[in-house]
Image (tube, rainbow, N blue to C red; front, side, top):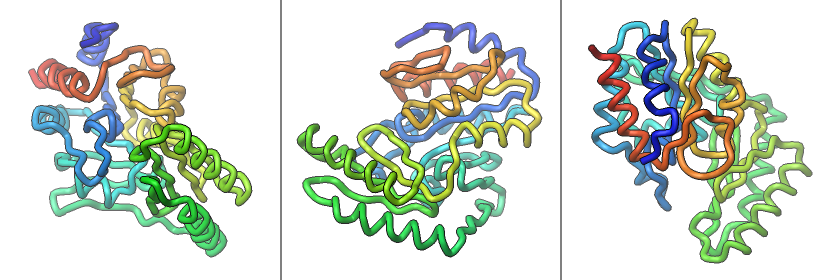
Length: 256
């Protein structure tokens, strides 16, 4: 378990005014699964989130690349959680009566572009590669492929398709995402910060797409990188298991 700046982050959050705790899902709260429908937050993490959302003046948010329908199908999140999907294209809130999700309205041009991107990516399916369709994006996943070279070749083709058809190209872990709405997790964090009037933001993520959120953080905020790879984060944890422990300790601190 990595404790680099761990204690300092807990101390900072303990003294924070109106904190915002924003977390990625896959690879951060939930371990990666070859079948994304099997991803789950460990029970200790579910408990920590439940306790955090009950802290007065704290806002809890999950900011994911998944569509919100996919997220809510697998994530056990407490009422009161803010949810952001599709890298910031979808916003919602978990109310006592169920999720309240803002509708995504695409123009006719964007809908046509999305369909064209989907057709082009579907031509790359095979050897384990598969395509995911979301409200504003289509994604080529190559994680199940046995050949890393073949996977990279398919991702190169996906990037070329995106550039040719004028999409926003987002690279992730063994995936390429093509979006018709140009948004980032960084912009989502800015929106959440303003909505909550947060005095401090803690953001945790594991992927390249989370770095836009890391770069949006100020010197007073806390960025947590989960796993390997370069990052602008100030804290690094080995994996989702460490993230769950950290959130439990944070809930212990803030619930007293």
